[in-house]
Length: 107
Image (cartoon, rainbow, N blue to C red):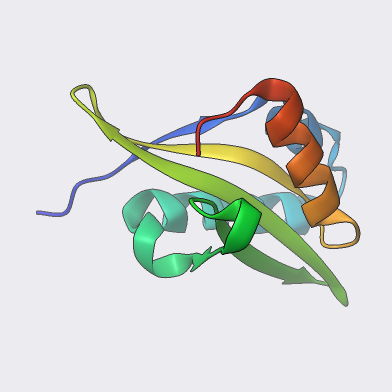
């Protein structure tokens, strides 16, 4: 039986999802989170360089590219996926780097 990872959204992720008015887009994010929980190593693309340890997951909706950035943490309490940031692809990685730096997130 496959282990399901617990998903922990950051405050920035929760705020982004809460603000979404487009129901089909909100559902695409919820589906993405489910996929990430089931197999976070396989569904995301592992980043390199100063974003090593971070995975990216793409969502396409109405001609716009959205991105979910997450890290995987395995500890004695079980396996967890920390969703660091979700948003549109534009300026996403600059925003992600700023967010990681300001919130001292473990990658």
